[in-house]
Length: 192
Image 1 (cartoon, rainbow, N blue to C red):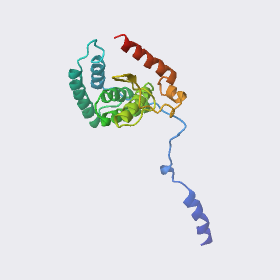
Image 2: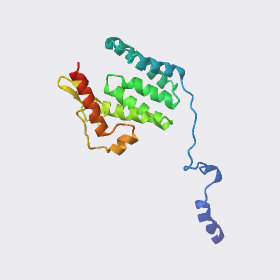
Image 3: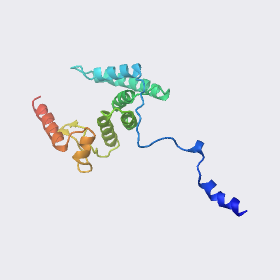
Image 4: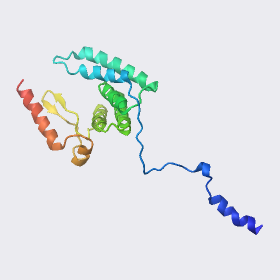
């Protein structure tokens, strides 16, 4: 009996070979995800609608809603795969009109970053700022500039929550650069 008890602790501590985790968490493996050409075309249309000199916002708003609907269908069907797909989808939802659109855009941007689209860090920051402002909270990165009757503003803005180092890591301009941009917008307004 003593011999059998002697082996019991060793058996309890031993991990079966089949159950061992073969992953090495110190090694990252890039996974190629195919880009959906329809998502690319939707993004191109979204951007093109904003690059004309005289934007008809009534038309663009209707087109934006149709693009969001289709992107939602692609997303629900599991048709978005690559970092580019999620990056493009984030821009489409950022052009929504509801807080839920901006929050979804933020989630999509995070997936884009996770899928290797490092330039999506800016849209992740911008969508979070837009979401926060849409729910009556101050933005934290400073990506949103709004025109009011008395001029341009980034308010409400919690200026000191994030450092410029974190802004830079998120591809967001420093506070000094944001202040320059605000001054440019004000100067342009005065020249109108």
